[in-house]
Image 1 (cartoon, rainbow, N blue to C red):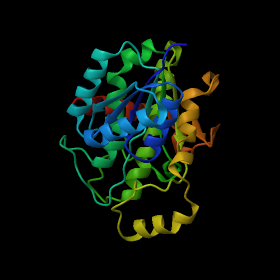
Image 2 (spheres, helix red, strand yellow):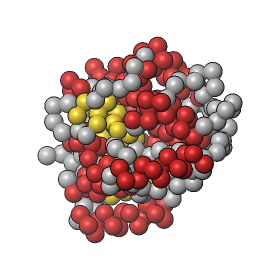
Image 3 (cartoon, helix red, strand yellow):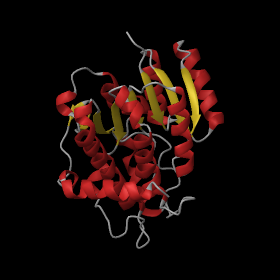
Image 4 (cartoon, one colour):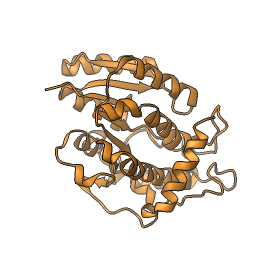
Length: 277
């Protein structure tokens, strides 16, 4: 059986790390896209020691820097023949509005635009591998509204509203990928990993911090949170669910807003323009 080549963003902690470990145990060759290469190298050694799989590679990629994303994609395009699985796992929520080197809002770039640029830049390899593209979204998408008049939250920034909108965008992106590339063999999915006990929300303040503190008793482990990502990367016969949203390894209903095809198409057009920055 051919070795599966899998790309994972945000693999140095939490759900991403557990996903990487599980797929390494199943023999996947892993290319882990990381912002911090020191952490990446430590993770690489940990995975090799734990699983015996030596096909673990670290690629520097800062999703908040569009040139860094282009550089990482160029490196992968030069080294690989095809990609079997791409897991757009990295994400973030930010207590205060921040902008990237490209002048874009941090939540939007980290959770959506960086992954949009990465996926489109790797599309030749993804098509060759008839790949599965997996976007880690969240039930937080239910409070998300597509603020096309203020995508960068220049007016009235809210951490939860910005995060919810971009988790909604993860779902739109998977649906668009299925629509545009499904007839070429691409499968695309989005998922809710569960409310996971990680350092993900560190730095939140005020009411957002209180809400996350109150949610702690209901949180699951990162290993549990990775289960649906692993399922979507490995399970057979998922073709009929192309473009779907999953929870607990099963197809789940999204918000009604997440089914708006006009918003989905508008996001794609805007993202294409912005990734040229």
